[in-house]
Length: 453
Image (cartoon, rainbow, N blue to C red; front, side, top):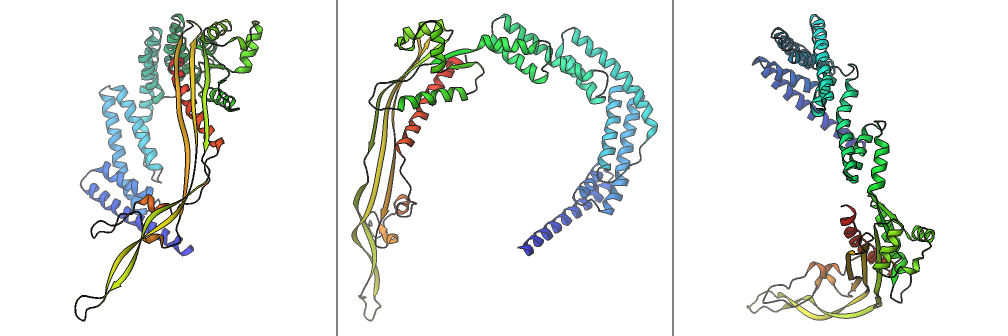
């Protein structure tokens, strides 16, 4: 194992050597062609792979110095032409290039005579940009203000409160839009605006209070009534109800406030009402409106049938191939081998369980008393297992006889039934859980059409 590890390292070393040789070759070619930028880049990449390559360091020292001087020449040109912003950004490009070479161990000579020129240009330019940004802010031109303060941050991140003002140029339009949405009673939009503000700055004005107010006004109270059980089966209604509540709560919709049975009973008692009086959409709407809900969900199970066929054993007809020698019809010929088939039976043990359900639900609006969504959900879920066995040669077993002189087909599923790993059939508990998940997913998807409006 250790030998393999060292072999792997040796292969990596050889590969890196090949790469660096190629980089050095290309770098030298570019250097002799006068393309210093490309040459320096190849030498730099060589040092990234092999930091102690002396030849690459010397080559980068020479070519990189020429590149840096050219960058300074461009800086000087912009200064003479009074293109202040270009000059400032060119100087910063010089510093970035100097740092890049230093990161691989090559320290290029720095032309310090340009430093005071840069400082004067920077201070004058940034000061003017700062005033321009303030003017845009005062004129509510937030997009333009953000661009200006972003530009300042790139040149001098520590300049006055430019970073704070840049943040303000982002926050203020969001904040004002949220206020406008509050006035228009578009509380969900307002909540989203204030939420964005708070994520950037929790202390910005009174965004936190406005967000909470918007959320309160945008929230939709949804009462989940107990599932009515119209079957003889016990327990499924409770399980389905718990699944509905859990799924809706886990959806994490900020505007959905799920009111479960215990909360409903408590709220109804405060109004001298009882759960037993809610028997139809009309009574559900009235009760829900009194306690401040927007919707009430009513669900009923009309059918629930569980069947277990038990273990079943079947003998299934198949054909086993075997070889047989027959005398040759030619004088002094060798015997011939032919394939024949015989009828056989293999054993198949199977078991099947199924659960059929029929569930009806209604989403009632407490504002109108109307049923805004309803459906009848019916389906069956089942599980079936088969275990096939044969005492003879399974590999020679075929489900049918050959056609003409061709061997009969042997489907993959036919072969695999003799090799499959034995597993337990799904229990009634498992099938019940599958049913609950299916039902609740459909109901939840329908509900959120109205909740997300």
